[in-house]
Image (cartoon, rainbow, N blue to C red):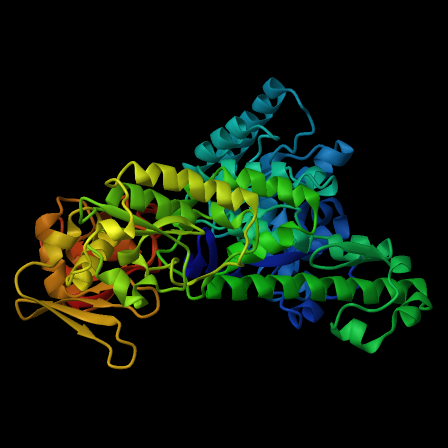
Length: 625
């Protein structure tokens, strides 16, 4: 039903399959009012809309619309034959006190042919914990009853809980057990309207921690592009909003980082088809209905353009940078970044081992990215000094080891970089070599780097001056490959992989290490893109012998063994278990349930995802054993 095609941390480009076609995520579903459609859904398709959302209660409550929908189906009634999601009327119940039967409205959504129907959750406006807790429990009861009525329709079970993390955790955990098809996060509209983005971040995180990773997450009512990058980064896949038309009725133009009233615009700062065709004065002079239509079209173009930017950032691996840049557009987004930086330990689980693009410093929050947290953690846990003396250097041009005199020093050479203390043996791995910093960074970055450096110096021998050490070392390349192996695979991996007669082959063009042979057998190749190793079959055998189960393993079921032996990739539905330490694009050992090594490859998913997903690739096989 849902599978991942590309990712950057928790953000993912995925495909959600419905009865009326596929939805490529992340995306936004424009809200369609069946009574008032100034822009037809078919016109929205040209902008990038793949699905829409409409309110089933509005249809149910109108006798004429209800009969049409039941007789001809929802898609014929709206003349839109692509995926349609329906809301249940929870917001109307909250706003106007309307009484709706929770089970009847789900049956109605099913009967009119909705692709994704929604339970009638309780949208709370209360502040008292006990009252919200009661409403959460009622929402869960309704979900349990509703899911039995869904038929072939996909069902969305909404996570509620106000601004209480504990209640959001509880609600998400209970709903996760129901294995719904989509999990919306509700109750954020008042927070969006009051620009309480930090609380939205807390709500998303609290919900995501308990929701199954194989299901798309829908952030209900968050339709302004200003929130999209942050929400996608935290794992939201679907959005909906009527903002495009609501803002247009109020003469407001939506942009990726702000909203401007028509009288605040002197020059068109947009190149969408509307803004390219009309001047701001021409739009001001239009009749009311035409003006609303043109502003609404502009708002939709801006909305879908921002989503395309996000997809591009995911594919390039620089969504974190985009989020950091967007955060400076509003003080409340900076408050949200404070929430996110405190979750880097959890976020690191989903962070890829490296990225396609260099680590680009963009300000205070760059040092708090999960990939930096991982760098510091692994250096403290996995780095093994080679000498009884250390020598400390200031930042210098990268890679550090191109200064050949450094490689001859018989001491642990440490460079105090913008990331903190870095052994020169690791100077080519991501993100160390592939990073761009200004000559002067902010105080927060300096403080975090110093904090890590102090901890690191407790792990290595005492430092000496350059004139107090010998300069006769000839084994830098051996130290380098062992240090990288320890960092990448775990402490001791360097000795396990590289023993016996070692032959290192370097690129004739760059002089960098490319392949390593031990006793005539090819064990690893070094990737030019990120400085890490790709394991060959012989290297896999060595690591399999050294590391105890389940370290580095992906365990597959018996029914997949023949396919794997033929070199076919491992799909998630065949994964029985996996090492908890695995991160996206880590090197893995593929074994059967008896721990017999069958292949080596690169995992696409984390352990949680491999176990939970029913579709999609889990491991890309490189070599069979």
